[in-house]
Image 1: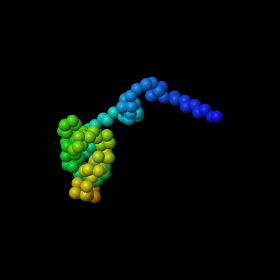
Image 2 (image 1 turned 45 degrees about the vertical axis):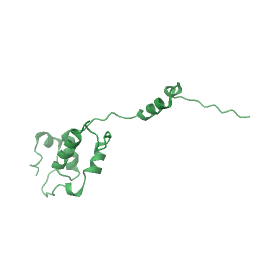
Image 3 (image 1 turned 180 degrees about the vertical axis):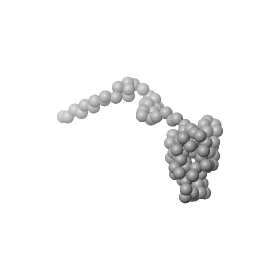
Image 4 (image 1 turned 60 degrees about the vertical axis):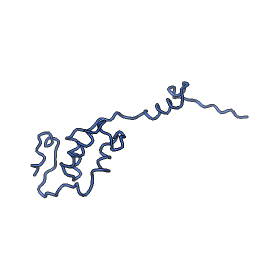
Length: 119
């Protein structure tokens, strides 16, 4: 006859608790707190990917003014804002016009507000 011994190093889950509480602890383990991006970060991300600054401003306003802020149209919290921008806002009609003499956008340009004067 063989006896199996199971050792548990996870002291948090080894205490007696109901299934719902255990599930919540497991789901929240390792999740980072979401920090919403600034307008400058959204503009830079759109610009770097070839999309218009106006679209970036619209996207930021849409999510920042939601109730509660940074939730999608279904009311779910947005966890990955860059992924959400790619999936929802990065469309061909939102592409920025190509300028041949355009210099790269820097965060300093965003802070100074010299976005449309690039080039």
